Image (cartoon, rainbow, N blue to C red):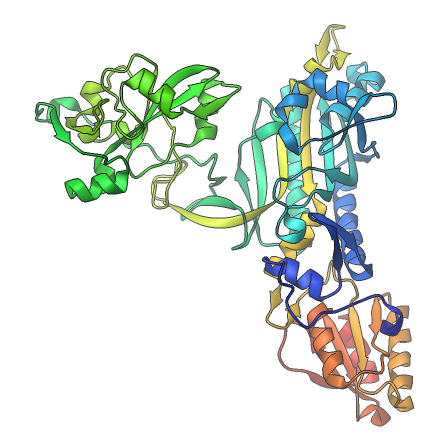
Length: 565
């Protein structure tokens, strides 16, 4: 490809609207242009990379035995109503009506559509197992699109769905996809970790893993063990449980009330009492499906609402407002305590391991000291209700401690079970002739997000450094002067030879200053640059890999061999 004919509008300045490094690089290197917030056009270089990512995904999906289909982006709302997600999905679901006033959605995902398809085509266990996938544009009306392709309203996604006759079959399908994902992200040159995760709005009855690209810009926090392979998203992360304190070994003291005027927050209490935040008990009142529940955690910990919602099996969970809190505790926000509450009480394991602590007195401007969890919270439901923190013990091994990293979710695999097959009546006859619901799995990869994640990891101060597996071109040939016929002849000869060898070549034939050409070359990040300059008459060129500082002077044959290698 001649660069003079390529639509590649590079920018020298960093666009002010771009916060993430990947977003800045894609705009500066001419990969994308914004049409509206969260909606982008892919220019030729960006599209070439996207196609290579798609190809890697297709090859590994096909290798795993999945079959490609293409489903409509426009979906009847009645399917979402049948599954129960039409209202639950919230404002991110793009809703519209046709001229006949029928409701439709623009699909953010395709569980309902694929289940309806298989419901009509699969009726016997002899047709199972079956895994279908597609690569298609999805739509989500993000409240705050940001970071370029990392959080957009329109994006490219690979979604796959497996159908099995039993849970053992689902486990095999899940494992096959899990392994395929590891191969995909490795081939893309990504530094990643599979982590245990929560199923979120997709739902399901079994395990789920997210594949996280490690990057400082990541919106997710990942807890990783220092000694073993355990890794989990913070919303799911567990921790090694401390032993509950034996009450017999504690010298009990009488509860003591302290006047704490307008002192509500843990940091204020710490200063007032001169104690660390771990000396306090934090009582939070939630409303779960319309009923109040108290959750008690240590003062230096935070309630994990996803864990809490799952434990309570609640469809709706929210922190109680001022009025509700006063009604059920007798005190305003900031003074609630666990003693004397007439509602279910959930106490975190770390809280129950305390010898004693200070808690709200359920009276305005008062707290109470010498609260002993094993005495005063004997009827509380013990459990893991908090976020893990750095330094917590690993839940999977004896010695490891949890460390935190930031990550970008690029893939997610779910064991759905019968959540959608039962809701949409997708059944089959087993070997005994008995009708039963299909057992499903769901497996997604954000293909366009993957592009951004790679760039967050593969760049320097000069621009992009593409992994060669997804680079838009393999070799960038840069004649110093396109007006020098000797240089151009050698450059064309080199391009032809490399093209015949199966390499993709971009030839910078523009009438530009050498400095402009070299800056653009570093910016777009093609893995190998070959400069044809003053030694062209001798058949000598300069060869420089993008990720190295030094260049090599080679003759034509050596340069071709080096590029092939």
